Image: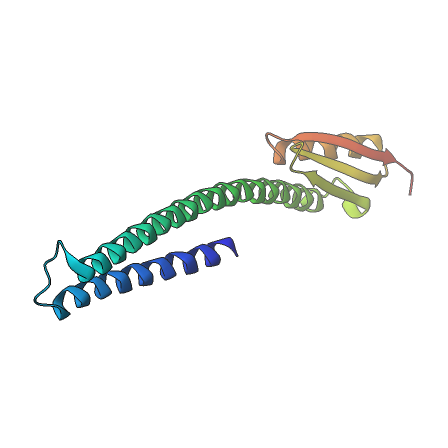
Length: 160
């Protein structure tokens, strides 16, 4: 929203500056007998020139503010991209672990949930398995698949 307002201000300033310069040129041309350094025509030209200078200064100021806003927006986009990337990374790990658990015929993964946390870069196994051996095998498999992530084994052993 700020960039639209700043763009409108910048456009208005440019139009005003253009109009002021056109008015100055028209005034000087329409009075062929007037000297550019004396008389009412030169005063109008000088006033128009001063107005154009003020408009140009305001336009530059608006441009500087737009540039600053764009820089801030760029930094926020970069930060957001990092967060999205981290979240995608943890979700990939969760899917890899789930797929590996389901593919392993020695582990009953029907009651295992896998959760991930991008902030802590961790994967958590929750649920139940029928034996301590399957609990250990599930953790080992998760550690292999979620390389670089902390694996938390919250599985409980419960007979079928």
